[in-house]
Structures are given as structure tokens and as C-alpha cells.
Length: 309
Image (cartoon, rainbow, N blue to C red; front, side, top):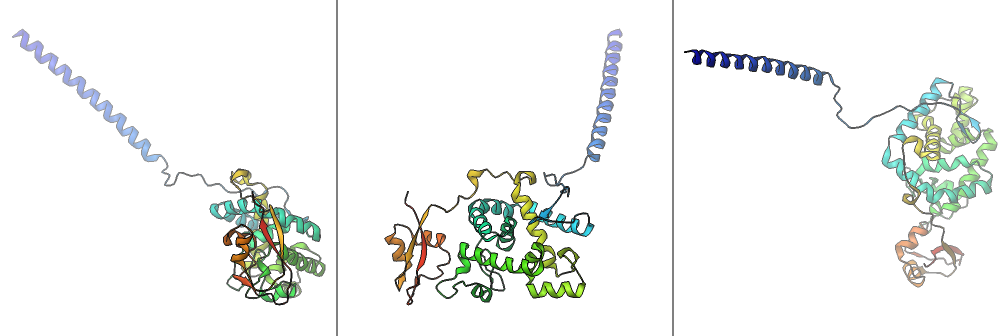
């Protein structure tokens, strides 16, 4: 009998211990669940930050008045758009390594501020683009304006795609507008909207600078887009873009110029004779828009041919 009583007592004690332990465990689990319910849930594994608009900003040595809230917010918009538009901005950084040396040299020779290389980025992303209005090339010239600045444009040759010649033409236009307005920022705005339109807006609104004017959305954003390109491409790492030099596109500067004066040249034959493919010929000379050139006037065309390794 005593043995049975001891057995029952031990059993009851074990049951009580298990009950206490189970209650304690449930209490801990409840606390954990409550804690987990209060933790923030991140749908995407990323941290998005705003961009501080600090220090001095300028374009072509002209001060950008970011102390005006409207100016600061317009710049903020374009910095955010281009900092977080990753694929486009990475391509801009890579292409700038290839084409900026060519553009910088011509800007310096023509007496145009170096900052205007970023206008080409804003216009075309440093590609031979075609707009819905028919503007073409890095500098986005319309056919009529291109011809006004002595570029050959026909069904076989389109020098709006000729980087060097188009850059010279852009410089001539910008210097003309700078002489007219006395301001590089207004010259840049006129590149987008046209000199007549900018002059009319200055007169009607009694404005004195680009920042005084209430313009259409595209022109209103235009200079700030250029400024954003300048800020990011001048210091990509500051904005989180870590693109090593060996991953940027190499300049296409190892070539010779071959003068072509004969008529009825087939470019595939020309490429074969010079030991390159038709594709590479067009990469180096995108202004050759046809498979041939008639050239009855025997004009001298300088065609880039990459040197053989």
C-alpha cells in the first residue's frame, strides 16, 4: 500500500512539473509572437534614401540659386530620378568614358564650357538616337537646323551622326545663343525650346534668368536634368554607382582616316579591302547611313578605319 501511495505522489509531482513547464513555455512563445508582430516587415530588401541638396551648384560657372525652394526641389527631382534609374545611369557612365574625351576636346577648342558635355547626355544618352520629331544624333539636330550648320544630310550621308561635326555645330549654336542672351543657362534652355521661344518668354514674363521663367514641363526640367547628369557622372561613387574603369566602354581612338573621293563606293567592299567587317565600319562611322555612296562630285570623305592589332 505504501508503495502505491509513493507511486501516486511521484506521478502527481511529475504532472505538476510538466504543467508548470508547459505554461512557462507557452508564455515565452506568446511573448515571442507578440514581439514578432511588432517588427516592421520589409517587402523589398533595400534601403531607399533621399539625396541631400547641400553646398554650391553651378553650370558653366553660373551659380544655381538653390536657396530658392522651387529651384532646390526641381534639382532634387532630377537627382532622384537619375540616381534611382539604375540601368540608364550605368550606361551613361560607361558611354561617357568612350565619348567624353572627343566632346571635351572640341568644346575646349570652340570656347564652350566643358559642362555642355552633359547636355549631350541629357539629349541622347550618348547614343545616335532619333526623336519622335525626327531629331537625330548625340546632339539631336533636326534636319533643317543641321543643314543650317553645314552638315551633309541626305539618303546616303547624315552628318548628324558624325560626332565630331555635330559637336562643332552644337558649339556654334550655343555660342550664338550665349551672345544673344548673355547666359549659358539660357543658351542651354534655348537648345531645348528654341531661341525665339525663350526670348518671347523672357519678354512676356519680364524675367531675367532661366530660373525666373515658368516654362513648359520639358524645358522647365531640362537644365536640372543636365545638372543631375553633371553631379552623378562627375562623382558616380557618391551616388552609389561603383563602375570600375575596366567595365566602362573604351574610347574608339585607335584608327586612321582614309580619304574616299571616288564615286559609287560600296561600303561592304571598302570594309573588306581594309580588313574589317561591315558592322565595325558602321560602328566607327555611323554617319554612313546607306550601303553605298554615289559621290558624283568626288567630295573627300574621311572614313575611320580601326588599326589592325
